Length: 331
Image (cartoon, rainbow, N blue to C red; front, side):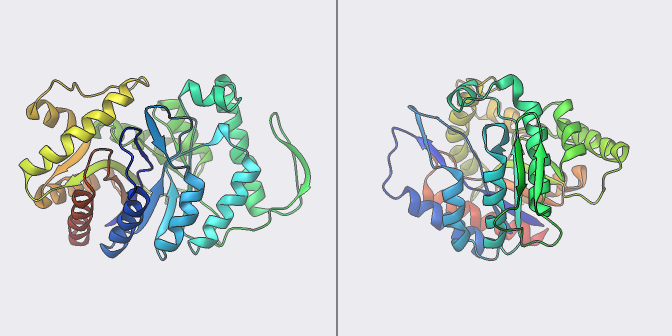
């Protein structure tokens, strides 16, 4: 089973660690050594003052050398806030750096502060998104492109570089409502869901995606990547004890952006209930069974795991990576 690692670029501003960048490099090396097939990068803007975060583009360039031979992707870039011509240029270069194994994952964005900071009206995000994907597809596959759109206009331009992948550069579209999943089926090459979606919700949305692909006459041989928060510990009790605090803190922050979070007052039983069908937290036997369950229930072709969170010690992250590599090799 192919597994990818989500590279955690954010941290608590109060936790300034001089080894942070070295730790990220070591995590990617460990994933490569453990047999992971890809690394994935997020994007947010203006996350301060409580949080800090490395920008995605320079980190992808840095880590492409460390991850040589692995695929690379974004999960997701906030497309309406970006320049589609610049993004197409960068994506083509990343495709060369990864020997044709780059996946451009894009989403709408949802944080009001980001839209305001970057001068984009939130209400324009859907039409911008659709237009920008059209612009990029043309630029990545054609020369001497002229475009007349609502937001983009240019004459007779050709990208500095075309993708290395002869099949073209895959664009995966994220979303967490029915309209977004349908849009992904129509204009994307696959759909990307969030890491905490319950299993039943993912089943419904993958079915909706497939039905919309059929209706739109789009190819049906698409990737089905499943995203999960994942930690593999030496035993069940230790796995829960190590992962609970960092995950609780993360989902409390998400609750501040309008997403449901875990009640910090809850104990281990409440955490298990919240984690069930959302996270994969346990020992190697449990993780193996869970991944097989997701694979069979969703027709998964690959997994993307977020495995490091602010507050989780580096040695535990590396040990979890090694354990999950063994699990994936057995599936």
